[in-house]
Image 1 (cartoon, rainbow, N blue to C red):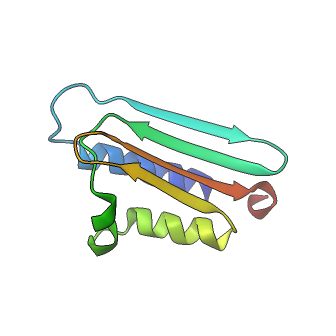
Image 2 (tube, one colour; image 1 turned 180 degrees about the horizontal axis):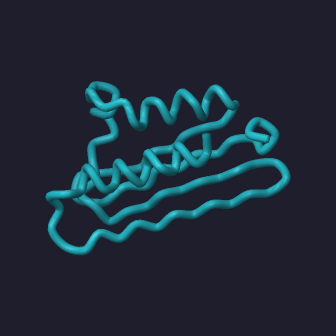
Length: 97
């Protein structure tokens, strides 16, 4: 699940920033300890309005949210148009073993 979520997050960055001028920078952080797995993907892309996410026809972040919550975790999305995005989640380590 963690691998597929990261794969989808990186895919989203690529797809939604194809028309964004300039160099795209993506930072991926993965922290694993005894109690949790934390993943964060930050980019300097064009960003999006988080409020409109629920009305969008895309399924990527919606599916990630469902899977993360199914495992007892949380998903955080921080983005604004023109400001890039940060999408991260945390799940209990025992839920993915």
